[in-house]
Length: 440
Image 1 (cartoon, rainbow, N blue to C red):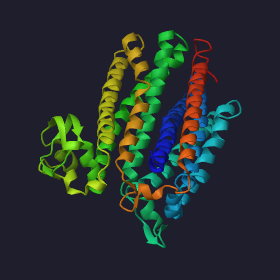
Image 2 (spheres, rainbow, N blue to C red):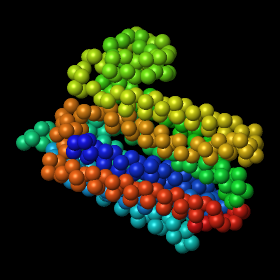
Image 3 (cartoon, helix red, strand yellow):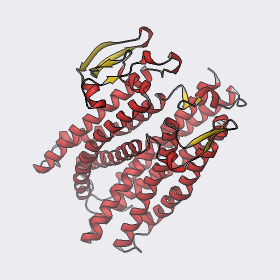
Image 4 (cartoon, rainbow, N blue to C red):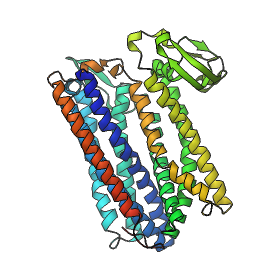
C-alpha cells in the first residue's frame, strides 16, 4: 500500500468521521432558532425547555465535530504538504476566514445558549440562537467554497508553480459553489429534523418527556418534509452543474460509456468497469437527458469521450450516488407519511410509525456520507480538478510507517469518541422526568 493511498485513507477517515457531526450541528442549530422564536412570540416555557434540551445535544455534537475538524486541517501541512504549497494562497485564506468569522462566533455564542438562558431575555436568547446557527452555516459556507474550488477552480493564476488568488469574487462564486452549498446545508437541516424526529419517537415509545417529544416530533416531521423536498430540487441543480463542469463524473454516476442522446435515467444496474458496461440496466427512457438538458434529445457525454487515465473509480461513486438518491426519495415519502398522520391526529399514537422514525435516525448520516463520497471520489484522479493530480499533492517525506501508525491511532481515537458521544447523548435523553421539564 503506497503513501498516496494511505494518505487518502487517513483523510477519508478524518473527514468521514467529522462529517457525521458537522451536518447535525447545523441542523440542530437551525431548529433551535425556530424553538427560540416560538418562545419569544408566545412566552410559553415549554419551548424554552425544548431549546435547552436540544441545545445540550448540539453542544455535545459541536465538541466532537470541532475536535475532528482540527485534525483534518493539520493533515494539509503534514500528509498533503505539496498540495498545501500549491494552493496555500487560496485554500489557507479560506480556512483562516472560516476560523475567524464562523468558528469562534459559533463557539462563543454556544456557551451563552447553553448556560445563559436564566439571564437572557427571550429576545436575546433568540438572537444568541440565531448567532449560533449563523456561525454554523457560515462555517459551512467557507469550507464549501474551498471544497468547491477544488472541484471547479476559478479566480486564480498559475505563477511560480503555485495557484495564486487573482479574483476573490470568482474564486468564491466558482461554478459549483452555490448549488453545493444549498444542497449541503439543506441536507444538514434534514439531518437535524430526522434526528429530532427519531429521538422524539423513542421518547414517545418509552413514555418519557411526552410533551417535549410530541411538539418536537410535530416540528421535525413538517420541517423534515420541506427540507427533503428542497433536497430533491437542489440535488437536481447540482447534477446539472456536475454534468456541465465535470461530465466524466456524471457519466460514471450513471454508468454511461458512450455518448447518448435520449439517455435513460438509471433505476438499477451493476457496473462492470472491466468490460466497459453496466449489467442489468433498468432505466427510464430519455429520463437523464430530460433532467440534465430539459430536452429528451439532449446528448450526455460518455466515459469513452475522456482519457481512461482521467476516469474516476466507477463502483466507488456509482453505488454511493444511487444509494444517496434512493435515501432522499425515502425521506420524502417517510416525512410525507408523518405529516399525513399528524394532520389526521394519529402521529403520536402510531407505534409502527414511531418505530420507523427511530430506525430511520442513522439513515440521513449515511446519506450525507454517501453524497460526500460520490462528490470527492468523483473528482479523482484530480486533487484540484484539471490542474493537480492527487498523486502530486502527497508529502514525499512522510514515511509509510508513520501513515499506517497514525491511521490506526486515529481510528481508535475516533471509535472512542463516537462511543463517548453515543453514551452522553443517551445520558442526556434517558434520565429526567416524563413531563414538561427537559432542561440540560
